Amino acid sequence: MKQSEFKKPRCLIVDDEPLARDVLRRYFAKLPVLDLVGECNNAIDAFMFLQSNEIDILFLDIRMPELLGTELVRSIKNTPKIIFTTAYKEYALDGFELDAVDYLLKPIKFDRFLKAVNKALPDYENVLNPNEPQELERKSGIDSIYLRIDRKQVRVVLDDILYIESDKDYIKIFTSDKMHLCRQTISAIEAMIDKNEFVRIHRSFIVPVNKIKSYTHELVEIDKKELPIGKFYLNHFLKIVNSESH
Image (cartoon, rainbow, N blue to C red; front, side, top):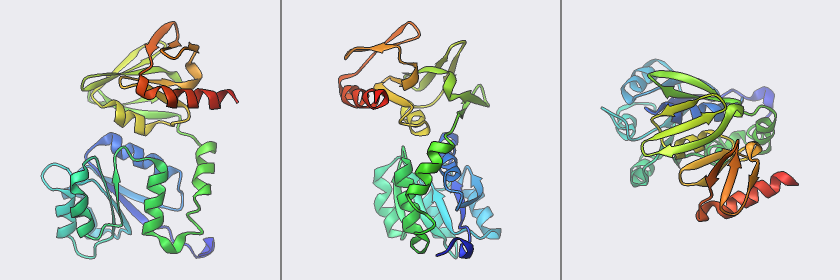
């Protein structure tokens, strides 16, 4: 299909987690051929939205309060193409029984998101070129994220981050002048940031590669702070820092 003949597919995100919606929104920004026409934080609002809006692809979480995503699909007529987005593998069978195009497990990586979109739009393969969004990503990388802190969505500039620490059900994001405390998992934050710019070094720590002052096989030094490297994360860490040095 030629670009001149292309009509942007209209897409809707339905997810009760603000960070999950933020990740998908970032991915849409890398694919300008998609038209993100709305977001809903619950299935009931999505049901109402779908009554008066035509949607081509529905990016739908499953486990939400009041009404499950699978229940939403069963309740609507003229069902759009469904791409389920969930943290729970046990719903996969339900998803495919509803003829879902794909089933994405959180944290969702961009290449997996792109693959699902290509499955939903096989006729548009010349428009959704896998090389195109990668080029866009290099040119227009995300420079900040929004986190829910003290009942507000607070903008955190990625370049200001020294390191991220997990503390039970919370994460602490340390910058040069303050610490942000956010009720979230470290895996959810990991899914939001560029894997070439940040690296997980431990089950409790993520660090920006360009802030690493020195390292051994056991420790990373950042701003006079020494952070442990977990054995499980060592090989990947070494791969990332070695690729940066070439």
